[in-house]
Image (cartoon, rainbow, N blue to C red; front, side, top):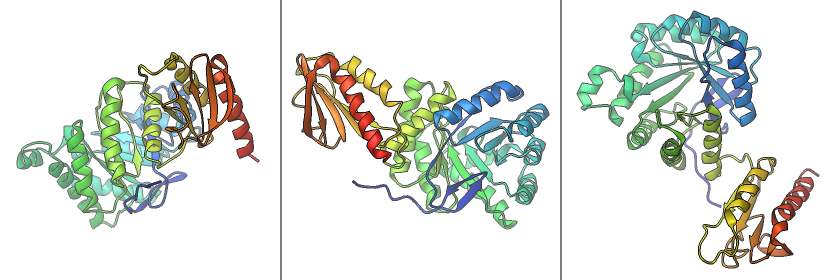
Length: 358
């Protein structure tokens, strides 16, 4: 199996994990609760943790949110990232209150002097910064110079901020260069990756609702990951952050970069199909959520798309008229009534899970 060759980047410690270097590509999301509501925010952090998030970002727009952060940090099962805009004092408070990383957009916190001061304080706490550059808050001078929020403009902005940090010896930095336009985003990250070894947080900002945002994110993030670019990802959807985590994990698993759950392979329905395959696939998809073993599971609808075409699957079922088959590695091991296919597959998965734990 071909593997993605990842670009070598610096390693940055964020709480209990690392971003970049040889560390796995991490999945992160952002709470959408009111940051000043301790109970609701902590509950969502736990739900994100259970969904598979490895980092969680929280907006810190005011002092109340910064104080709540201090209460959340010791209770959170995940490293918490403070998201700061406009008020540099909220970044200072977030450092004092235990944030594992601080995300800023240097273009809206008051200039190079304040960025340098923040980096100095962050260094004292051994906390990294994420320099977040995006098309919506690009410096006016660069917007005018490049004729818009182009990939080159985003990269020039990031390099300018990094120069300020490098001049004071601060290198615990993660960089993001996001646009809502997929192609601009891809080009910006590709261009930057040729210039600096900082780990990259990748994503398509403001990608929209799940119906379109999932596609835009999969294309943008997937294209970069296939190039070996990216050390942590966030899928930005106008939806529950739990959905973001699910899509992010699917993207990573689709490129064989991480394995979180069994992979479901199913054939497109056509005139050869002698069974209503959709409900069978839906039942198997739901069932697989209970398994953590790294398997490929196939659900096929006819003899043409049966064991032969699904030979790469570890285990699978193929439905026919009234009857169906269970197969492993392309070899038929059992014939059962169509109504028993899902149950038979589950029994085989239980057996394989038990064997895998021996």
